Image: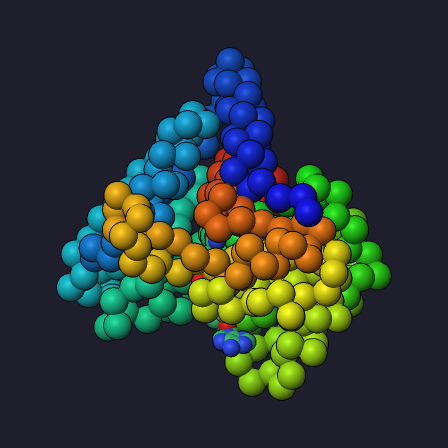
Length: 295
Ligand code: NAD
């Protein structure tokens, strides 16, 4: 079994980005600038935004965090999004989800200028990705593809089972892996909560992407010998063994699946760190006008 070390790959990519930013600075170019909107005080959201801010600082990007109380009106938030759309200093921005119930997430996502939508959640970016046009690919699927690339995992002609059909992970990764590309050309089965005989389906797969959000759901009896297992799930559970009182579990029962898998990602330290560097990569692309011409 080989561990797919997302933390290590993410650090390598951060070094590559840092070198590029240093070069941009030397040439007097524009330093990439990522902004994040966070609404309310959700612990997980605060952690994610904190990680993103730290990662920006590490690679030399500028970063701005706009914080709002959870009683902010939808209209006001839409205006803030519009301000960021128009702010020529900001190359890309994200709105950290979830948002409070009185705000339509879809409305907010669709208000983001697709050219600045470095999370890749806007229907225009998703649509462009589906038909193979240049697009911001949402950070988690992009991170998974990068791991597959850097570990030279063959996807062409292989059977992939994706578990979970969310718009931000399951659906896009299933499309990317089926796409005609160096990290695609797989035969993909997208499974979900209504799938019958998931064990039978999963146990035939060469590659399993588990993205359903149920701790330790995927057990060894659902995995073929020699499969590649990518664990996207993050569930926080109480633990008396850690200082924080919490620990993170993936969707895969790691110890037993690791014995059968050829490649496996750990949680934490697998897909998570890749998600953050993909956001940095998208921001760099935005500042260079690689996907859409620079604004
Ligand atoms: P989600 O929570 O929106 O949806 C879960 C999906 O899993 C649904 O499509 C549902 O049909 C499917 N599902 C639920 N139970 C199932 C079952 N028993 N069998 C088969 N399918 C089932 O999905 P999400 O937002 O993609 O999140 C999934 C997990 O990934 C969560 O733990 C989340 O925290 C994690 N996540 C991690 C990262 C990262 O950077 N590592 C990024 C995004 C999400």
